[in-house]
Amino acid sequence: MANFGGYFFPPKADPPLADMKIMYLSIFQQFFVISLFLLCSSDVLAGGAIANRQQMMQQRQQQAIEQQKQQIIQKQKRAYQQQAAQQQRAAQQKQRQRQQQQQVAQQRALQQQRAIAQQQTRALQQQKGLQLRQSFNVRETVDKGEAKEIVTIEKIWKSMETSSKVWGLMMDTTPKVATVDRYIEWYQQRGTIIENPPIHYVGMIDAMSQDNPQMLRSPFEDVLRLVAIIEYDFGNGRDKDLMAVEVLGEEVYRKNKQRLGR
Image (cartoon, rainbow, N blue to C red; front, side):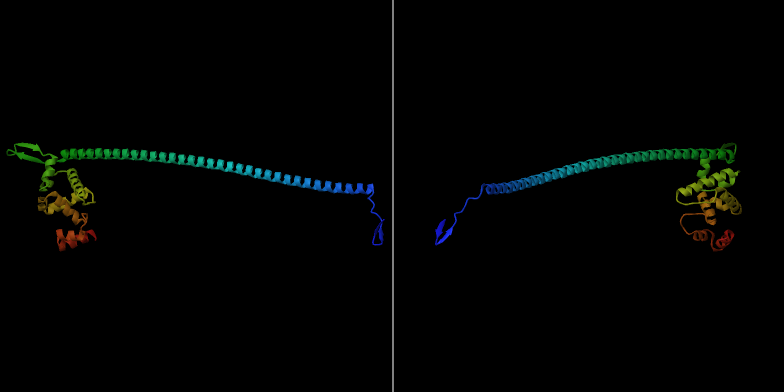
């Protein structure tokens, strides 16, 4: 024993071998547990990192797939738009072609109508000329009446530009109707419309010239103008009442207006 100031302490004994084994075993167990924990933690961390990387890779793959899908959709959309535009242009071109064809057809039809109308006009004029040749019984005496020749239609109408006396020499209604019709067309070409039929004015001129033969001394255009004004049928833009007063006078104008029921 050691003596420390009168006190004696027994010497410290070494721990038994069994206790030391237990102690070392406990330390080893703790170290093993810590190592195992650290190892598990590192595995867990490593596994988490791998999972994160896999998730990121999956996201990138998904994004790449979505981008490819969008690209495909855009390509299809552009292709559809291009196809639709081509179809629209083709349809517009066909429509323009149809319109051009229709215009050409209309122009041809119009030309044909004009040609037919011209042919009909010529045929009508020829027919009128033939009727006039057959119906006129007007002759001029040459060399004291011994030689005679038939007066042509052109000469008759030419003479009516200065005097209408030849009207009384027409022995048939047909040439008279043709003459009135010719002057109605003549007035129409100059912007004056006469609507009553030629036969109406043939009767008026015959009746009025019997009562007043001097009216036939005037050119036929004036004769037709007179009877058309009396009938309120001379459409040249002027007031018809005023024109009637000018040619008839106030008194005859009132009687004529009563006759027409105006």
